[in-house]
Image (cartoon, rainbow, N blue to C red):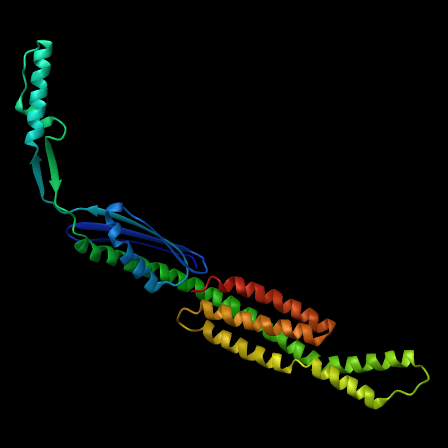
Length: 288
């Protein structure tokens, strides 16, 4: 499901901005982009996101700005300064140019003086980063919930449509056996025009077909699956994978009905039901 969240959090020392984007994905796929200096905090960020989300491709962008005073020290490389002086004297002697050098010149040479800041304390940074991430996650989840509610309503309408198809199949099912008996009687009469039909054999053949084409159990299980699907759809928890599984069971029952019924009208209804199921399956992939 798609979602977006962006938050900035501050302390006396740090300003952290987190930006989260998510798009549909069957599993949770995380990508984190932030300055390499703070990579040791990546596992903590992933843990926070995983505790709130279970599906979707999620991109997290983290920017960190140090806004407090950071104590610094000046380091002087005396050995390097002496080497510069020695080298300059050699040049002066070799070129007959007078050796004239100021102290400030030596201090400006590369590497003689360096500014050393205190090492950044990531444990002090983490609470600020975690606060920003938490707020961004809340925004993202809120957007996903709103989208999920709309999607759930659409799926409920499709489930209601499938229930109507199921009822049409249930009404048609008893007529299939009667149609078979009439067709079988007519076929026998055509072949054996003047021979009396053996009613017992006809009844046995019809009973065998009725047993083979019986779909009452499949229809009953379909009703149960639809109810279970709707129940999970209303739960306030991650249900995407459970809905996936129930859809597989519904599809299995529909396929069985199609193969057992041996009837054009029921076959047409089965095709219609499978089309709706495919649409629902695609929508369910977006569910948390």
